[in-house]
Image 1 (cartoon, rainbow, N blue to C red):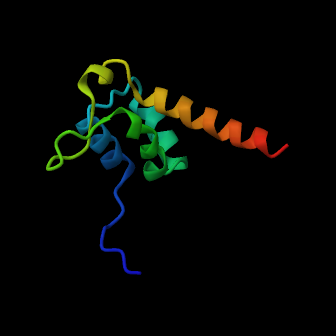
Image 2 (cartoon, rainbow, N blue to C red):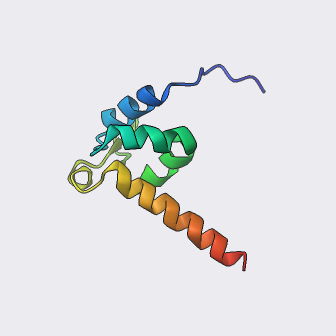
Length: 90
């Protein structure tokens, strides 16, 4: 399978997430997380909060939720999910 999309830098990943209404309290910290956790893996944690009502536009976070959501909220959900999967291995 041939992939035509080029990888994007961590800074571009942050800008893409900001463009989808995700807030960042500390971009330096976010860069560190995105260096270790794939943007595409983390993006799956935004799905429940997306506004899919306009199919011709990029997926945006629901505006009424975007005030509550920030990057660290996604990280906390990612870590919690990871810990629950580890717990199942016992």
